[in-house]
Length: 334
Ligand SMILES: [Zn+2]
Ligand SMILES: [Zn+2]
Ligand SMILES: [Zn+2]
Image 1: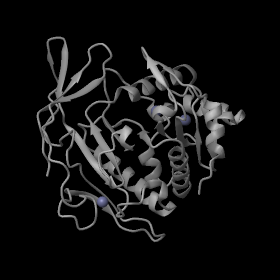
Image 2: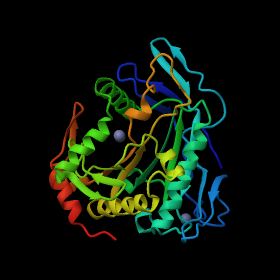
Image 3: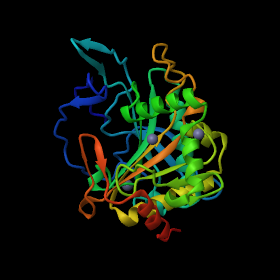
Image 4: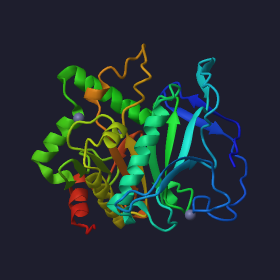
């Protein structure tokens, strides 16, 4: 059942971030069977499935979010209301069911299972990018009550939006400016420096690396990224540019580390925007394949065990990335 209430996207005229505004109706508490377990009578509409692979991973599927924030039909109809920008909440909102098991989370899954999940995510992102209305498509996971987890079943989500989210836009602009100046990728430069003094590195493989960023916004912030330059997660995964089993293992290890220190976390994929959508005015994407470098960002929520705060957008973290990386490295993962 897809229930839609009246929602719109409003743009903050000062910070330029988009906000989804809507008065959500009271929704009845979950009744009946989990909508994502096999054979559920409440299963939402299935969009895509990937059958089991020969190493024992899968099956995985993508379904319409039972209470989507965006709807696929219609045009954004971006318009002004005086000084303000408004548009319809056109987009896509899907749930990726990463396991048919109700009780197996991503970090408890095998390489083969995680690979199937990553492959389906990459395929869904590529497919949604064929829709020229969508400027940005991404994958994210909210785990734990403090992260706003919505369902008991282990899932992740994909959204396609008619705008680029603000944090990604900042990264894209900064990467583009750095490239314009130096003709190098700022992420590759950062990685090279981190490799020389590996204080903040948590795990390295042949193709991927996880680390605590130099200026972590919160304690134990973790990034997972390819070691060699790749701008697009979805293209890399579907073309086999990196070792998918290694990526799967590192994602599992990374989440095992996070879950050892925090009950809740946000995970978000930062990949290139929809490059079919070239903006003639802003030209964000002219060098994006050279200047941007995809990565996962994982933000643990520590609750009362640490007291990070931000004041006027200045972040304060009471655990440095060097100490965080050292503690995360020492955790046992399998
Ligand atoms: Zn379930
Ligand atoms: Zn790079
Ligand atoms: Zn990022």
